Image: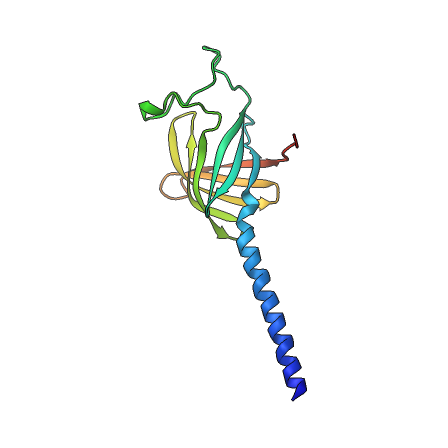
Length: 157
């Protein structure tokens, strides 16, 4: 009888360990997206962060932060909504409402392109710990473009 009890306890502990490890991996797996990222064009740096259960990204650095014509900070001059055209690009939230889908993939979000004022459906895939494939598209993902972003390390102040 004692052998059966020991076996039961071992199985229970093993099951509890495996279940808690899997739950922990699912809970933290989506946060692998969080960090500072450099799009392939090198014009900006994007800080991706989590708010609630969703992921967002805002512009935190611009290679050319000021408009060459005015000398003032660049604004969202191509926004289709006139009331937003004076919104500064620095700090602008360009990635919105992404949900973690497992297997290093985030979907159901949008990406805003300030260069043309368009918002696209978007999905993101972490291909390795320091590389993102960000795909903006219209309708279905086949009709889109993928940009590769590289992770940047944040320097301590």
